[in-house]
Image (cartoon, rainbow, N blue to C red; front, side, top):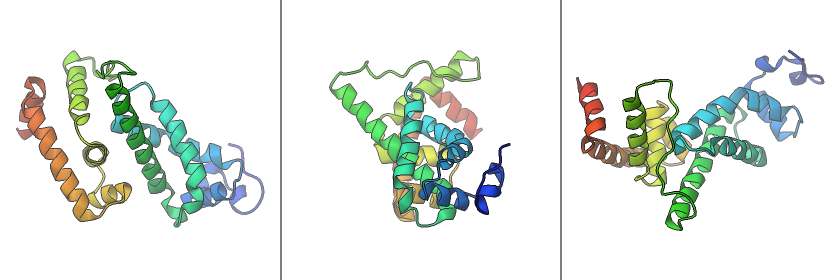
Length: 204
């Protein structure tokens, strides 16, 4: 792997650089920072966005938007070691904006009828694909913040404090948001013949 040139941080192999060092390079407009941050976190950002907005065709565009937002706002990062949660926060704001735009397009009938496209999955069982499609349809009924909180907690496995931090709310607030979202998802899933079977299996 090519070594970076220059001072102490620049002489380290890319994988040896800490997040704090990457953050300083990005804030200093080091031209190598874009590639290094992308290589380390593009996969994570892509997965967070996919889980947040669902299996749409614009996830790659949202990944690009997230990194553009990161480099535009990296100067506001107060703790260099918090590069990862800072980037997750930008990804969530990007997802929230995309969800709003998608709703507006549906209201104005500028896109299709809102049905989700075929869900890519490694499982060949069509029932699994259909269950995922129905779950995302239920998530579409939630408000943006409720949906993102639910995804962070139950799809990404974030702790409550991490979820609250990512959404920029207090712990008490995120608990209320999650309670509301969980109640809605569980109620709607129980009303669905396919999803209710999954719930029963989980309970067992």
